[in-house]
Image (cartoon, helix red, strand yellow):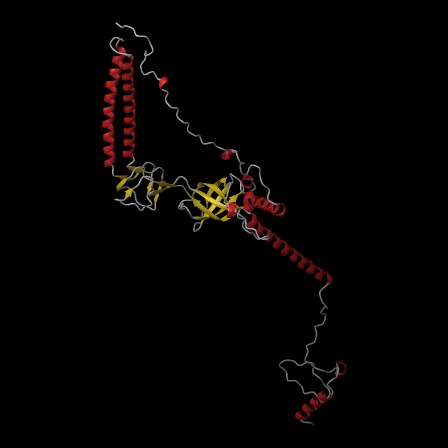
Length: 430
């Protein structure tokens, strides 16, 4: 009997001696080790243990041809779907950033009444504070009225003087006209009639001076011409107000509007009367309005003359052209509660298609119609409407002529008879 060491050494020697033994040479009695059992020691050269697990019986060679065809068709459909979605997303992004009528370049605008006094003087009273709301006709500040009160009293005194002189000369002229040719002469009648006319002219001039003095006294109280807010008030009591120099500003609260500066590539979708939504930075609820008008002209840099009066034409890139921005005026129709209107605030404006809003079918139908129209615009170009913007000379674009005053014809002395009957022959009156 051999020892275990000798058996192990012999098995190792046999394996090294014949390393290219094939599976056909393995004895049928080769056994598979079982976990948990003590493995018997094989005799040298009799047994070889295969460490690879045996294949399960009945396993198929691979998937069937129908299964492979279904997998391939599914992959192709998924690829086509991804390509279609990518193309659709590209069209939507292109329409949103290139053709859709919206802009971030918008601002709130307002009319500002720049108030200047019509008379000069020292400010004795300021009745408003900065950012105060005032109504039309409210007194903003008062100019020292003393000088103007004196001027009014003086002109009224002169008016009374002229009135008395007019009455005297009228009576004298009438008395001379009633006398016969033996008591007066036509020349004297003419002189007294002329004196009465001159007194009437002096009286009329004195009346105008009284009216001027009275209105100047009233102008010492500077009033607000609009309903609005006093802004940037820097006035104080003691300042000197000069006639014609602006010293206070009032924002007209009834004149707010929104200007949206749209690129010229988007103007085909902007129509007068379309709804508009403007969202202020920092606020969620939009301001609603309607497109009121479209600006008909913007500054052209190439029109400025240069050396020797020649046009100064700016060089441009052949392949890169920046779209001009056209101001669109939007009339505000609804302001959400709690949203202040401050001139100069930035807004994001979107123009809503009026025709799409008139249709029915709900939100999904409107979105589908909007998408179909935008897709057509991308493929065939934007379709404009004939009544989008009024033509020149129509509606609010009508041409108006400013009337000019006519020169007053000089007074013809012969046209007014100063002394009636001066050309008649002398006669005796009883």
